[in-house]
Structures are given as C-alpha cells and as structure tokens.
Amino acid sequence: MTDALAPAPLIDAILDDLARQGWSLQTRALPPALSAALADDCRQRYARGAMNRAAIGRGGGQQLDERIRGDHIQWLNGGESAAVDGYLALLDELRGALNRELFLGLEDYECHFALYPPGSFYRRHLDRFRDDDRRTVTTVCYLNDDWRAEHGGALRIELPDGSERDVLPAAGTLVVFMSADFPHEVLAASRERLSIAGWYRRRGSAPL
Ligand SMILES: O=C(O)CCC(=O)C(=O)O
Ligand SMILES: [Fe+2]
Image (tube, rainbow, N blue to C red; front, side):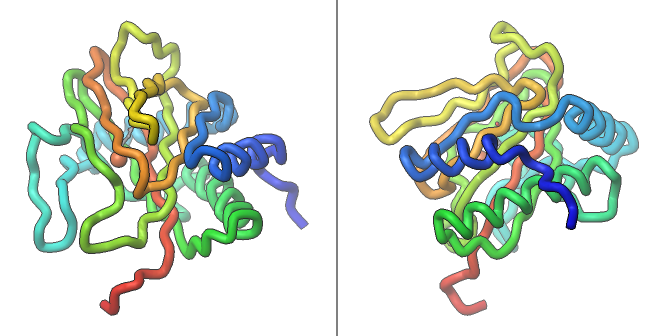
C-alpha cells in the first residue's frame, strides 16, 4: 500500500468548505518542491512553443478572442513528467474523497497548464458549458513564487451573496469551487502568471 499523498487535514478542510459554502481556498495545498517542478515544466513547454492560445467555447464553436481570454494552455496527461504525475495523483486522491464523502460521482479529471503573459486576463465567466454539463468541480492551483498584491493577477470570485473575493495566484494555493455556481475572472497582472486549471467531471446527461 502506498502512503496517502495529500495530508488528511487538507482533504478534510476542502470537503468541509465545499459542503458548507461550495468553495474552498487553501494556501498551502501543494508542497513547494512540487509547485517549483510544475512551474519549471510549464515554463519549458511555453519556451519550446508547446502551449497554444486558449480558445473560448468548445467543439466546433471554438474561437480565439483576446478581449475575453489571453492565456496560453496545454492539456496535461499522465506519464509526461514526474511533476505532472505527482500533481495528478494528489488530485485523484481528492476526487476519491469528494465521491466518498459528498457523493459527487466524479468520473474523471481534465486539466491544463495555463500561462498568462503580462497584461492578459480572462473575463468573467462560468466554467460549465451551456451544452455540456459534465464539469462539476473546478480546481485552480497556482505556481508563482513571491506573488504580491501589487502584481495584480487575482482570481476574482463572485460569492452567492454577491460579494467578491480576490485570490492571489501564489505558489501553493489551491482554489476549489462548484463549477456551475461561481462566476469568476482573472485580472491582468504585471508579471507572467502560471497555473493549472482543472475540472472534475460527471458522466454527461445528454447522449453523445
Ligand atoms: O487561473 C485562474 O485563476 C482561473 C482560470 C479560469 O477561470 C479558467 O481557466 O476557467
Ligand atoms: Fe474559469
């Protein structure tokens, strides 16, 4: 038997927050060594041109629009690097806990590296597509050392009571929220901003 990767208190805190308020902010979710290795991996992919400008919409309706989002992304698969495998193992452990404790029936997890060049942003949106309701829980983990508020680049989340919370994209921070319920946006930053955005998905209700 292998040791659990994620500390039980971290998993418990996320489950409690989600059950109570539908979202969770954890500032020490990723070990610093893993976060640093992921940041290196992301930067190398960007440098060799492996990351593409992110599109909006899905399937045949995809389009590029810098007025809506300006990040570059690459989808992640197991077996690409030790760092990515470590990250996926951690997030799979969380998936198991969400299913066991909150009965969410999450079948899989899709995620991508994202690099926002200075000045780029992602306008207010919901992560659940109109024509595809499989995305159920959103996760975003940040990979940026020494991030300060004056760098900008916050994730601004709108809470059900209409108030807003700004989350700094600092290394180690993981944000988790119910995909259908929290409009959010990424504010422009004065420096490069690295992250992994991901979605736990349920089986689709519509036939393919
Ligand atoms: O990077 C973030 O803080 C959020 C990214 C996001 O909203 C998305 O990729 O859908
Ligand atoms: Fe989003």
